[in-house]
Structures are given as structure tokens and as C-alpha cells.
Length: 85
Image (cartoon, rainbow, N blue to C red; front, top):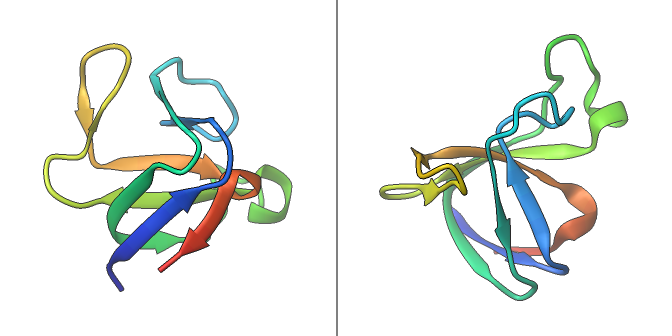
């Protein structure tokens, strides 16, 4: 299911929902992020209920991290998502 994710708050998109990986990018409240699909799943033995991050697969060329790398898959905290259309 492709669609658009709208952010509720300023948030950090990260490569690892446990903050072990430093690669990240900050996005602003009300940003609309086009995605190909979203997954709700465990991460390296940590249940979704514990880490509370959606795995978002971005459309097109992805989002460029603060480190300058374009990535199509990012994790975002569910509390920072206003809408999924």
C-alpha cells in the first residue's frame, strides 16, 4: 500500500529504532512523506511493542541522511505520526 505519511511533530528518521546507528535525518512537523509501504515488526529481537517505530519504505530516491547517504528505508516513532493516507 503506497501513500503519504504526515508528521505530527519534528522527529528524527533513523536507521535503527534503538539508536545504535548514528545515521539519521530530522524532519519537520507537518512534512508529508510519500512511501511505498510501511511495516510494523520486531527489530533484532526487540518487539514492536517495545521500540514503537514504524519501518517506512520511502518512494523514489529516498531521503538523504545528515551523513549524506540516500536511504529508502527509515524508522520513525509512532508518536510522531499524525496521519497515514
